[in-house]
Length: 209
Ligand SMILES: [Zn+2]
Ligand SMILES: [Zn+2]
Image 1 (cartoon, rainbow, N blue to C red):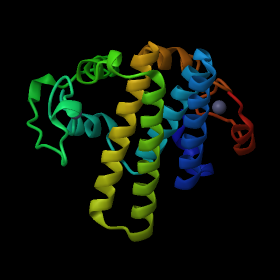
Image 2 (image 1 turned 30 degrees about the horizontal axis):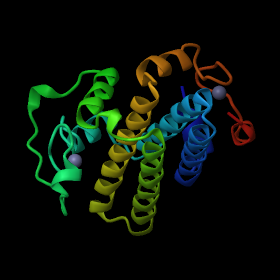
Image 3 (image 1 turned 135 degrees about the horizontal axis):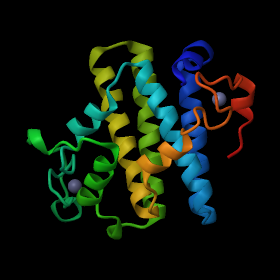
Image 4 (image 1 turned 30 degrees about the vertical axis):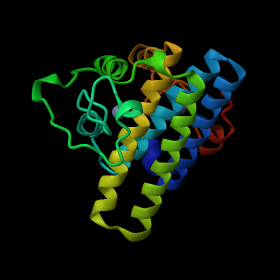
């Protein structure tokens, strides 16, 4: 639906700018208590993140599972015990092979188990998303500037962290990501309803959701 226009119209920095724009609009939804605004912009930001991952040929499913194998990526506990343990560095994660969720909905459930939404406010979940968005930017800038192989791995990890925060907000705001994405893209592009999408560069730039 989007790989053709993404490749033809957008540089990685363009993709990053859109991912950030819509993530910030989602945070505005949190500040205003506007659930619909939060939901649509969170889904759009998530979709632009997928475009970034696709550009780098990063398997997001795999990236998230390597980073969060049914465990917190810092304290290696489920539920997360970072507040109690206060890990100063990441614990080694033992990945249990058969525990990987087979679906997006399964991943969302997994994040409920690792990071129970009752333990944080929606605003805190939003602040965490902003932090991780900055880290995705840093990782992309570092790799594009220096092209070191480890830096590509950092992009993969930061994308996984950003995804965990998308689920964090969704779990706090009771948004079913898989169901909402299916609804949003049920008739191809959610704006022009074509596949591949035919939205122009300036139409996307003007999109106010
Ligand atoms: Zn933890
Ligand atoms: Zn379109």
